[in-house]
Image 1 (spheres, rainbow, N blue to C red):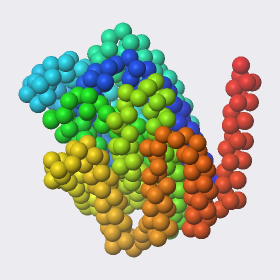
Image 2: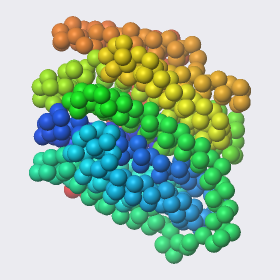
Image 3: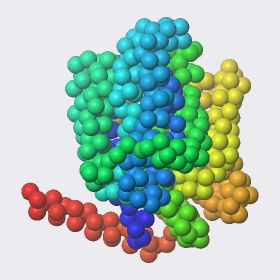
Image 4: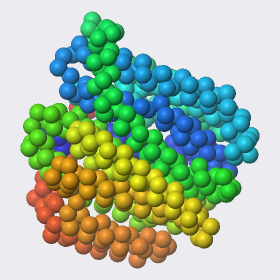
Length: 496
């Protein structure tokens, strides 16, 4: 197992722990809130997120790249303070807009007075947590992955401790009280973790350093900022556009299926946490090693993401029932297949962006690909939303937009970097996953169990034929994973 794969495995483990705790939180929140109240929460989060993304400025990924390539430890705090200064130039006006115009947004756009206070609390949380992603960049850029992964797992438990009681006692507003409290705790914790090794070296950048770092950040950060804004509008386009004409209950069904499907992103997010700093350094220092490392890694990730997506689609009805304790959210089931396909495809977009386009500083490729994704989704929805169920229309065009973004990245990389990442085997496996997922809405558990075993064997046979993985590699990964888990359990038992 290569060092990169080990780091990705640790990152994925911490994300899985965080996801499980997040599912518990969702499990409780959805049971406490009515469908209408959950719709209000999702509308407020979508509105806040759609405006809040403008504070991003691409500084998190840009800072990670520059910190990973920094020549001196003394540059790290300077890069951080420069990034934070720029971040809050954008964050403060956004906070003011959301806080003071919440009433107008809630009443004029959505005719929902219950949105006013949640939007204002979201604005406060945005202001408090403005530096968090850059603090994360300090930790990951300096390759202190162990500290970062432990933080991700532990802070998810803290998150649970805030949301569950506050939602229970204060309903919709409690969700946003928890958001504010969580951001206070997580920001303070990240400051301590990020700068503990730099005590005695922390200094503000002078004018010369500020200008130098600013130029380095701007060269890539603005492009990342643009694509981050586009991605957020793409992800939030469903609740935002559907909420203008449909009831909060309908928005809640769509938002629930979207939230469920988006959980798949924990895999690609855990991969990009490691790939961005590692491959950025590799691209600068050894281009051939960079290509070799990427290809050896991408095929295995592709196989794993498709398998995870298939599992989540195939058993969504049963998972929904367990999660909400009944059939209240069954109208969301038809949306799962297209939305899960959308996030499977976007997972690959996310990995290619952080592993190739950002290290290579291919600005145009990123912007055009993400713009195409948004344009196809929104225009397709407006063209067909009046002809078919608008929720179905939005779900399928989200998937189509992600597919075209991935294809456009392939074209740009083949033209500019002279290699491609999509091969026939990738296409055939993706089609196979779609075909195997079609019985997912069946209520016959015995039939689904039989089909799941058969489909799983067929999928692994197809993987072997593509050469993306071998039986030996799978056995080796399982053995090393079990060995690592036993080691962690042994350490915990010795400590206790």
